[in-house]
Amino acid sequence: MPENISPNFIATTPDREEPEVVAAREKIRGIATRWLAAFNEKNINNLLDLYAPDAAYHNPMLLEVHPETGGTIRGREEMRKLWGEVFKKMPKLSYLVMGIETGSGEALVTYMRKMDDKSTTREVRELLKIKDGKIIESTVLAA
Image (cartoon, rainbow, N blue to C red; front, side, top):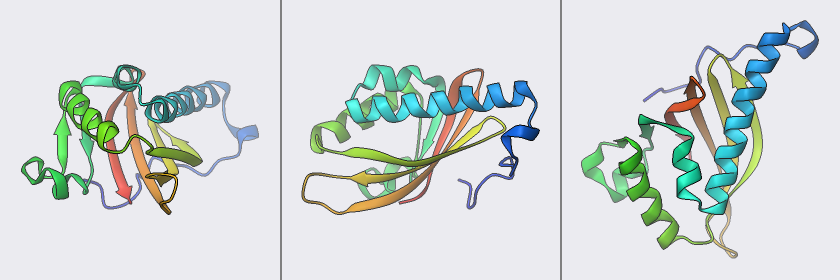
């Protein structure tokens, strides 16, 4: 699991980027936006459609509830099981997007995680690695 943010994030200004770079960033931003929407709708099928079949999901919190995973699960079916369990146990879980930074084949999504109407929110940063229009790896960096 990465310990810090990928070096693929480049500080640039939109007026200096080539049109194809802008288009690629917008495509990545669109995937991240659809990912957030599917999660908030608890639509597992739409969520999984964004992932490559053999994608990896890394989250240190997995160690607490599923220590046998080592903090990583692979493949859509394992993700279906996990998120089905999460959505059943926490039906009011939601993510409020704070920002989406795009890089070369990556999106760093910062969101506030809210568990229910009364809970406090927690800032989370998640790195989505994207190839050929699909998420190939998702890593929770801070929660």
